[in-house]
Amino acid sequence: MKKAQLLHNPTAGEKDFSGKELIKLIEKQGYQCSQASVKEKGWDEFDSETDFLICAGGDGTIRRIVKALMKRKRLDKQFPIAILPHGTANNVAGTLGIGGSLEETIKSWQQWELKKFDIGKVYGLKEDLFFLEGFGCGIFPRLMKEMEVQEKEEPDTREERIKMARKQLHDIVLNYKPVSCRIVADEVEHSGKYIMVEVMNTKSIGPNLELAPHGDPGDGEFDVVLIPESHQMKFENFLLDRIHGGEGEFVFTTLKAKKLEITWKGRDVHADDERLKPEEELNVKIEILPGMIEFLI
Figure 1: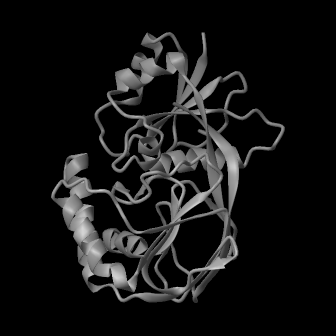
Figure 2: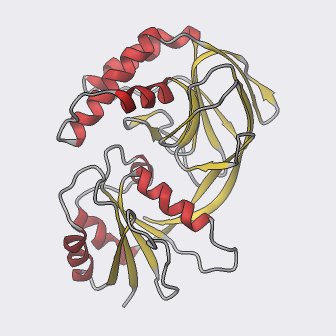
């Protein structure tokens, strides 16, 4: 009998299952399962006899678990992660093709495969940091900033929350002033004025917008998505299409790169769901760390 540890974020996304209910579903499939809330002290003290970790939460919870694993010593046991998507965007789970009901997802672990997942590392800030989904500048961190201070009541369903965020992003794009940016991707320069520069590791970011549909988080390369000043109206139309349920293919400038240098003459910067607050213009180096984490798919 395989031993699992459920790491549950009770405040994430759709609050339709408690930790106890999730354990019942997991043990029904023949696993021995313990539980810890990521909101409680000591949640990251993993039992060495555990075979795999289960993340029941959204992208932020996954990042929190990965951060704990990254702090472990190289010789310590490393644990693969199974995901029960329980957030709003679920960009990591979507990139890995994990979906369906909780019961179906848990049952699929009987024939699991392990998928290696790259990590992006950023140098040049007050302290080095990593990202799972993406690191970027421009409209997405501006959206984060506006959502932090808004007083609107959050919609009840995941679909309504995503639609609301996409509408808000569209309003931002309408008025966003392009920013000068120097980008060097694998020693090739792509400088200009942009409303968005996103170094992506997953296929989608933010309010579940698939900007790198052919991306693979285990291929050892980033997808760098650029929206220059000349494509601002085109991106507006893309967002309108998504708001109204369209699924047209995303066709904007995308580069493949393993190492980057970015100088952004603005303040709107993020790493995954964390909004950064540089005191002056951003000047960072980014590299990919291949296959640092394993997920069950």
